[in-house]
Length: 95
Image (tube, rainbow, N blue to C red; front, side):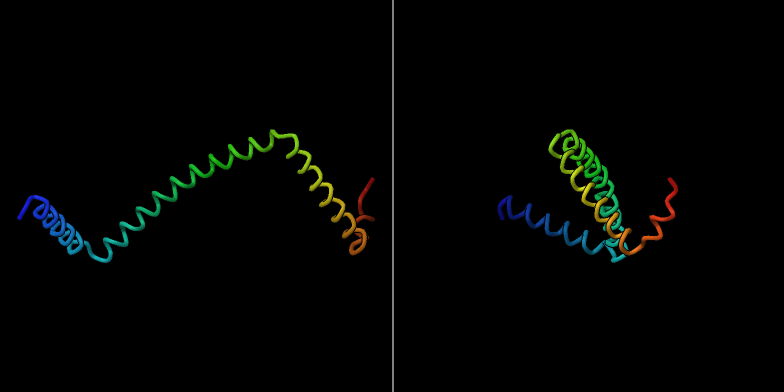
């Protein structure tokens, strides 16, 4: 046998021993630990990335104008719905 075959055989033996030594509960515990670590890393990095992107977009003038237009449309639809379906709500507003 040459050196590469011996090394491959050793790796296979180690992998076999590792698989044999781990029980189902061990595997499940490892999965939960890895999942928790990944989730915590992803949450922190994702939150930072989202905050940076939102901050960058809010600085843009066209984005502010779009937000204003969308807000106006929502307020108009709300006012129409309230005035048509619930006029008593508008009557209760004190001026």
